[in-house]
Image 1: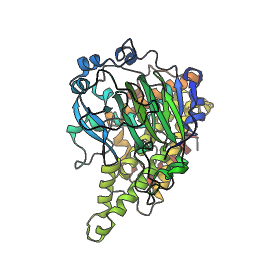
Image 2: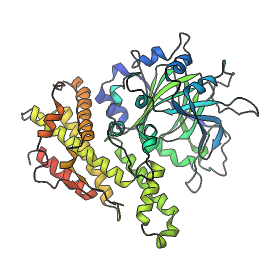
Image 3: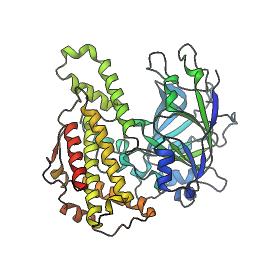
Image 4: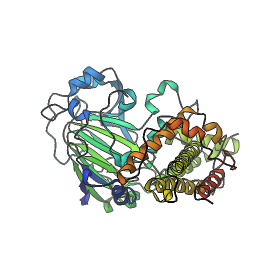
Length: 475
């Protein structure tokens, strides 16, 4: 069964699009786009690429060769993904073939003959976290409102000792990755972690992307909506996946120095048409927060259903559901609520900071003020949805905002949030003093007022934001 291509992804010059235009045209509408013209000054484009446009493998072996990385064997399926191997970057480079064999231009997944060399694809290398002093690239402004990585730079998403290990610090630390693969390597059909946005920049090489809009995602699942298609180019069974023949795909060829914005919930499959290095981030913010919650709720219901038969004999059935949810999805309800509470407080502090620094009646009309307010309203909507559940699964969740102000990690998070939005909106004529001593000023702010400083339930968070927004509007 072949696939139906219904169109191509739009291409635009990134230098000719403002931040507000990008948000309106792509982020809010959840539409993919290819951006050009944004990578010319990246160090990675100089150091990691040879004069002939191929990966500079020797540079990686020399400078980063001892790093341990995860490598996918593209010819071997393991459950819903490709089999993963662990090796050093140096070992990976040693196994890179001298000349890639010719492959069909369409980018179909390769068959691996017995005795042939494995097609290895280095994936999910936490390069930024491992080499913070080596500035390989600068995140384009369109993708800087990245709550996920801002947060993980200062806090762990999940701190259950049964799941989290200090020895595994790098592997759960952020969602900024480097990928390296020879011609013919590929990634099976999937939607991104947390149903986040993602962006992928080709430092060298060429990729073929196949996208499916979220409105059609149910068509790639089996009759029970449990298993999805692994490889859309490999004879998908009409019996097992009866809806697949109705899918209509969007196609894109990503060239060197192209950046693709992948919106939330878009299933996609990717093939390397040439030897390729790419930089990839997963991220979310107020615009796609509902996608994160929808996935979390769906995965929670599945986790609960899976162990329903032991409910009557389990002392802490809800706690077990939440532990399983964290293990399978990367966070549970409590983790998400703490995340939302910290970000609501950080946005509130910044809102008051702007108010104090722009002490006039027009401050609340500025783009940055509207941005912080939009964030708070978006968080409040999600917290309200969580609160509406019969049992939101809150076990031991409690955040005291007065104590939070003493947390160095939170102070850093708050400062990064403010600086990021200052950078974004300075292009829209917001006069921002980047030299201000952030930490001292924030500690002096009395933004809590008479409101209860503890948030222990989703309803508490809804009430806190309601009070904070009323205060900021002079009410």
